[in-house]
Length: 257
Image (spheres, helix red, strand yellow):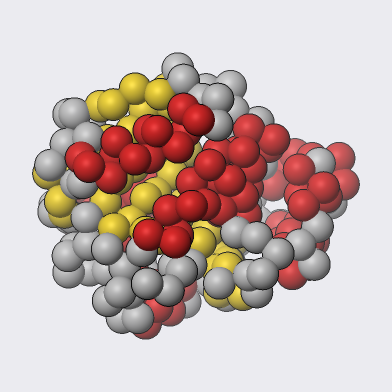
């Protein structure tokens, strides 16, 4: 079995489910190539817990964990099977890496997971396991979490970190538009990913231009480090251009392998 990719997908806001923009069709085309993938493991910032939790249910419900959006968004669902056996393997790998891990047999998929998956694999025919992010996760921890998941790629499992390349929702709600700062940050990250500058990405808050403005809190950036950790030096990094939505929300995404 050939090794599956590792992906970082920018899910932006929940409206990405209704507004595919540039990224949605590209994810759909990528999804058409996943017939050899037996399962998907996804990490999203919208499930944060004490320690790490792993979904262990046989069927994963669609969680509409947002408010104030158009009614059609709440009518969307992504019915998909879980994989309790894979959840046990994921838990073992994470425990071996030093994480405190617990199975969760009732949790479904939050929008950080089901919205991009709905574009990537709309038929929902590949089982999914979601891994939570610890409340105290930092860049080093996110990279370590991704490295713990990396062996799954040899087993036909697609590893996805779902976040947002930029994520200043305060400015979005205030209808502030300053794409220049967001673009400068996006270009820096893109160059660092292309050069596999792991140290730079771990220290992005000091080194990247406008980093704290692009990410006032860093939970939406950390999935990039998870995906990076699941990759290695043999992987070629590819940019999946998603453009900029709502002025400053970058939908650019990355794939390795």
